Image 1: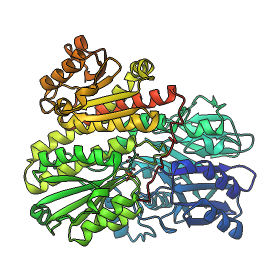
Image 2: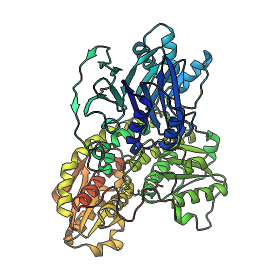
Image 3: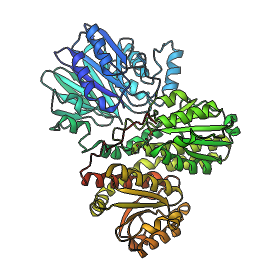
Image 4: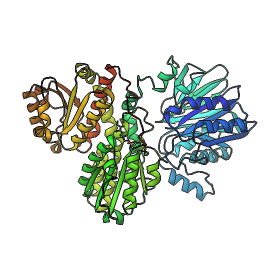
Length: 611
Ligand code: F6R
């Protein structure tokens, strides 16, 4: 996720911008830059890679100016490079942008026809061109920014400076975060509080559609209707570490709560509702190639492998292509059957996991087409793949995957719809229904997060358990696997995930009064509700304690389970996204109550780049 910092005051701005950007490093980035204004001339310094690269260029170039904007870029459109780094400039305007412009291709085409030349592959550069055009019509900077954002569909936190108006910064936001920091004779803007804590403790959180004009002497804010408004100033006493976590105790907790936003970002710009189709940027698989596919092989490890199992059900059901889900570490060491009519899909948060990468290369070398479903653009897997579908979850810092998993599920669902349309297994109407149901998911996640207090009570009751069993059938099987993995990796409690039907083939021997069993039992035909109730009865008959995840309106399971956690009802293939949330919260609270290092559990690394 990109980071923005802006400064207007009486000090040299470049060092302030770089030091603010350093405080936003936790958001993840792959390039950075600053633009400062000196006597009506913009000075732009940008560098790919770590901030120390930008810092040394700033030291060498020493750009002068007391007004400036800076940015760390987490690439989404266009690879990480100096050209794609922000600020982007055009016609004396410099912009930094966090978000996604959904209609950037149409806008770029239009501007190119009018003679504009683009210097980067980014969507963000469009803002500089639009604003510069508006300034030429005689508008002042705030009016030019207003007119430009009216043309844009998407999300943004945007800060703008221009040579023709060198004493102020104009910023505006829609769906991406932006805060203003208030000082004496100096004012600031940033995408998050930690960037500014060394300068001020007084902040204004901008609201959707707000436009702010910052000068050294003050800050004026206008709402969406262009009326001047007073927004409350909040005094923030967080330590810098607390601020990075947005006030949450751990990154994992923050990332669990970010999921409504993360999933909305996975969907953004991709749903072609009226056509009943899905748009993925850079998609190069023709309908002919898709129709010729005889098999999909999903390659992944850990949590990403679990999302692959859920993805198999989605793709087989909607696109009717046989799908195999392979543990990448196993696939690479056997002699797999791969043909040119196969598509290999690597699923990976980091895009760097050694086993997944090696398996993906192996499949590619044997002739498969390749697609990476990945959270990190420019990572090894995206470089290897013919097609990349980004999950757009934003950087995940907690070692235990949370938002990476749910965004993978949603990405796979979109992919299943796209393949289904190309193969003719889904009608326009059916695809529209699927896409409509998926738009409800961010709100459902918001609702299910409200179960946190009851999950915490369950966590208190069972924090001393030595073993846990997780059971789920059909689409809930990968959810059971994921719930068990989450719990074991951060609480260090032994946990197993099983398909409900497998219980009597072995794990039932483990059940006694000390064994909590989490049963994921929404009322879906694919989940075989009656059968999972049978599992609950079998556990109870042996004295086991049942924690059931059930639909909001379920009246039966509540009478037979020891604890119930209610979730909103989603369609069968999407229910895993919703049902996973309480299990993430359960793992989190058990681990936290046990006093564990939740974000950095023992023996684990965020990115497993060795075998
Ligand atoms: C579990 C977890 C790991 C990763 C696995 C693959 O919470 O994070 O199991 O899912 O190491 O990592 P990626 O998705 O980066 O390939």
